[in-house]
Image (cartoon, rainbow, N blue to C red; front, side, top):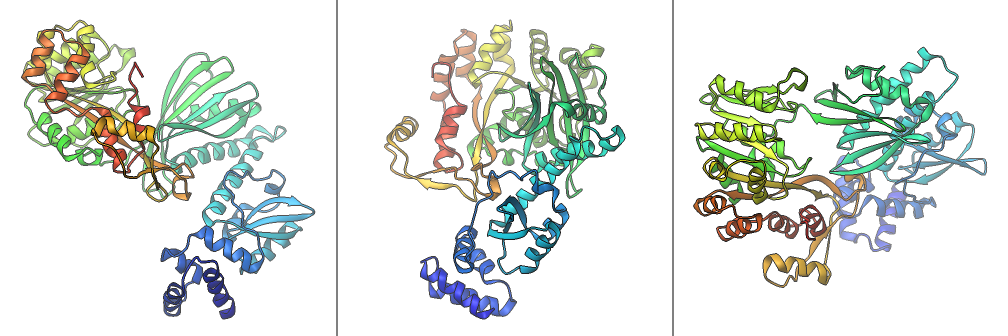
Length: 551
């Protein structure tokens, strides 16, 4: 054993991956706590797992392979129980030349190889693979077994129920594990496509046979309180599920629409345990945070948050409310629906069937002695009018609009028929925002940008850029996407005397932007470029998120 350890160290030195001093440091630690040399070298940052496995492969004459994107073979999934595989951390890949190709992480674990050989009846041919990739492969392997059980056409109905239930549960669990915000179940001609939206982008993850598409949809309808028999009208439902560690609970909103190929379903996933609603958690620079704090502490007036669907507007509103949430204020919200429950705040949801719309709700709320009113969205002239009048009568009103910039919110209100003199009197600030993907901190890599990117940066800094930026690479922590999570970029328009004069003379969006930037407003793209220069995101992400109509 000692000979092998020394030989591994010698191989790594020979290949230039470590130096003798690094080997000695790792061996000294090993002598005190008995951990494996390879594990210590990785933890000390001297080698990566891939480099170590490649060297181990040469040492033990085993090939090193990547399991990324590899799909379990249907024939192989019938051979060995998945719990045995997980216990031994080995992944059977395929049968070739009457041998079972098996991925292992520890070349010295001969007992695991023997167990697989005994159960499968095949001679095992081991290969080395990344530990996380083996774990992910086994998760997929388990999912394939569930899918196979579901697709047994001749099984009895009651025998099929359990696999379908397990499949739906595993699908939701997998989406939560991969940080998906939505699950899309889309009927197609020959299958039902399953896609996850992760950090704003859709990725195909699975497919369901046409024979069992209906039963999967029905199962989700049952648990979300929807009418299983009605597949010709849109429906909405809701369910709650615990996380894998039982410490969190997720709220899932389900919606269906009829499709020419079947029934289209989307599941929106919300973490009910998420409570970090603070301005500090939004990623605003200190200067912008100070502006927002000043706005929300005003006794009356209207604050609007603008941006497209999925830009994080609701999260910003919750953070703003949380900033002023204390026993001295009566805060009431009207939402569609209530996404997160907040202690100390009175929350109500609109009910279109009962005629309880945003405008109706605001009228009733005004009779409840509110200090602060949050309106989920201004969708029509009636809601805009009553919200503005509430702001003019001593209430702080917060709401959202779907516009591309802060200045466009003003022109949108005018287009809705609101008089400019009312807007300039009521409106105190507008916050425009977008979400851009955050580079994975574990694998992002620095590079020198080309001239086109440097020119884009120069437009906003006014100077030639000679530094480095960061770009996505992909690793086990981000599921090979290169991005992990999202960060918001902001544009904050404070309505001062200059802007009020612009509103009164019905200035267009461009004129308002020019006046606002002259008095210190940073545009969405400015804020985004700052985050790209800080290597939080990429220039490409910022440009994509802030495209204007003339670009």
